[in-house]
Image 1 (cartoon, rainbow, N blue to C red):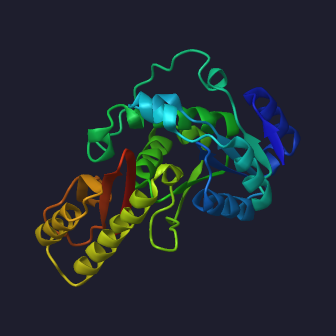
Image 2 (tube, helix red, strand yellow):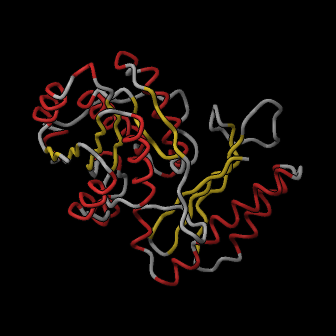
Length: 282
């Protein structure tokens, strides 16, 4: 496995190993890797001749400076996990390599950024678009892999790929959310949970699973939302930020389940000072 910190060295290596004649798969991460990331990496390895994983804690997508400071950084452990997964190349640049000068680009997401995460984290998705577009231009993969846990982010990445990065001809591959044995969605932030909050956080997925069951049995949206509100109210160690049932295409909240439309229940909640997100298809 090769490790690069300079984008020029990475580009030269990818060109020397076959250039356009070899398929390149890419998994962008912010490190602090868990088995969710590793599942993306293994799929990337299995579907491409060259697999690239980036490890870069992107400062422009943190609207809360305290969250950026506390974000776990475990590079050596990450490298060991990636090597064991069969990854070929790791790109772990410094901030100055990605942002030699401030990135002033502002992206139009056609409204996909205004609900849910966008409402509570202003500027977050613009920062995501900045870094993903830069990484895509550097790596120029054939396929890029993202987890469905970050449902809204995945929608926005698909949008910028289709509308801003069409010239790169990248296929975006959506991969299932990987969960702990008790149902909690894997997240790099889980390591920051206290023992009590780790136990309490399982309720997030349990409430989502029940939401899915209610939807499958024909319960109306209003009833499901009321169930979720009541269920989170009972969780004294969790603080609900939002719980929405949205149209998968527009990401706008719905008041009724629409025919020929896919819907997803999305949630963000705090367990102590750790903010967790999750979702489930309905």
